[in-house]
Length: 239
Image 1 (cartoon, rainbow, N blue to C red):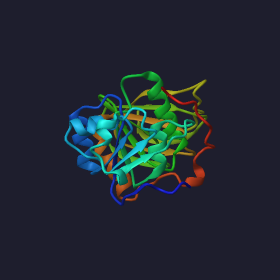
Image 2 (cartoon, one colour; image 1 turned 60 degrees about the horizontal axis):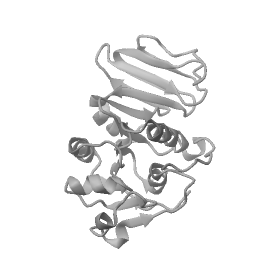
Image 3 (cartoon, helix red, strand yellow; image 1 turned 120 degrees about the vertical axis):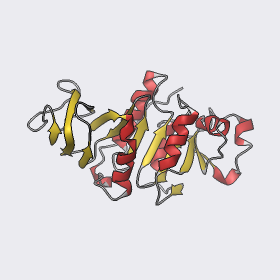
């Protein structure tokens, strides 16, 4: 395990250089008060009036004039190009849960790489903010009080199985596989419980469930142990 740059007993906000509004950042910081800018996310943080607790990345998107406003001790340049800046940040932040803004919207390849990072670091819970949804890797167990007919989408990143209660179409006995069978557009019928047999399932929910999802991990809810994370393949660098 790499030595952590930031260790926090509270949730942490990661701010990327993609699409993120001042409202997104304010919502994230309400629940995850420690702010880490991921490379170019530093500009968004400063525009919104924040100096982050740390800046992590290869610094190819953080302008020198923006870095000049951040104490040197808070700047952590990781120059290797085999992983994305989001991967670098999640790898070096140790917190009960991370809320990620600025990683959805914009370039599709960046979004796909972010979903890959959620899988690679399955043992580090992270909830990504999208325009109207939240996206995370489903933990071993999750229970959530939901409104009837709310969309619960399940998208496997690898072959994976599980079981559920409170879904219109239960998932027990289904062999999910990204090349064969996915579970998008399922619906809640009240309180939802989901059990997963291994890490690998993206869970996509309405954005208003961010607060209870953060609470799940902050209050010691189930999470994948480090040894459960899949083998970490190398990635090609992103522009």
